[in-house]
Image 1 (cartoon, helix red, strand yellow):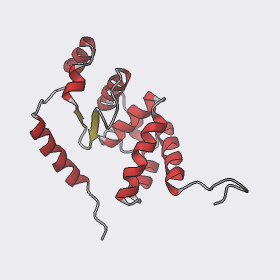
Image 2 (cartoon, rainbow, N blue to C red; image 1 turned 180 degrees about the horizontal axis):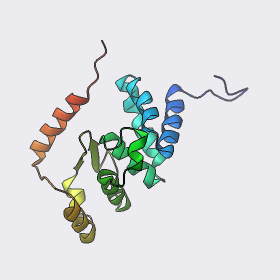
Image 3 (cartoon, one colour; image 1 turned 180 degrees about the vertical axis):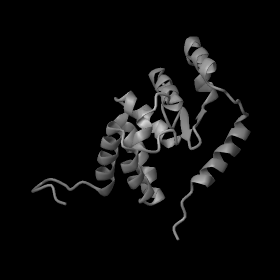
Length: 160
């Protein structure tokens, strides 16, 4: 694909990122699955930061993406459900200034791993809301790292 004289063509990564942004804004998990399930892990690792950066101004789409990665939203029909606790929590944390995939990370099984120091720095009313509506399991840094490594191993895709 050429962009015309003097213009560069878009990379595969740029094209995938643009598509993924659109799918998040359209709340289309099946199309996101087609992107993430059919690319090499390395490309997905490059895609995710671009996607997050592009969605940063749109907290609703970014929090929806967190719900998608937590397996809270697996199909378009899931968007119609009245209760999306991970998406709601993600939106709350994002609105409080936390960065997804830096200060908190969504994992399959409807789990968020939140940086304890960042969480403690949130305003008291935000912390109270989180404690009121969600079960908080605190772990040591070493235990959290072990859990994180185990989850990452679960997510590894090995080509046949």
